[in-house]
Figure 1: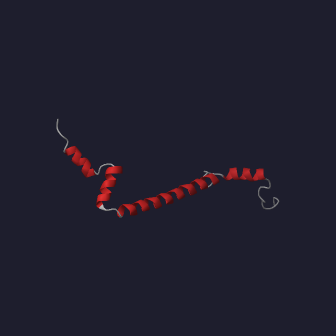
Figure 2: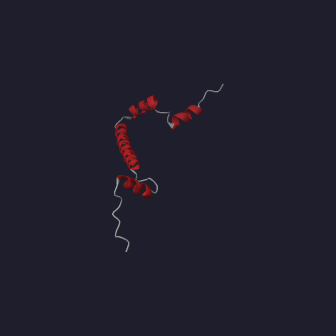
Figure 3: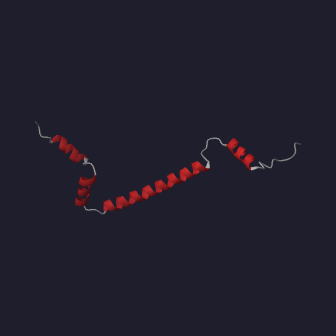
Length: 90
């Protein structure tokens, strides 16, 4: 009929032109694939670090937790409420 089936692009330039012509949204380009791999690796690392912190926190005594809260964290909601309710009046 017309010369047979297509054999595809034969030159590197033709291959690039063919790849650009078939690009729809860019989600499967090498750059996007690499970005998704890096994000997934970061999420895995974050989950691992969070679980280590949780285990460490659970192993603490209540006194150690209170000390940690005083040093590093904002006051607990109860401490905040107490400080507002018991402000000295001028």
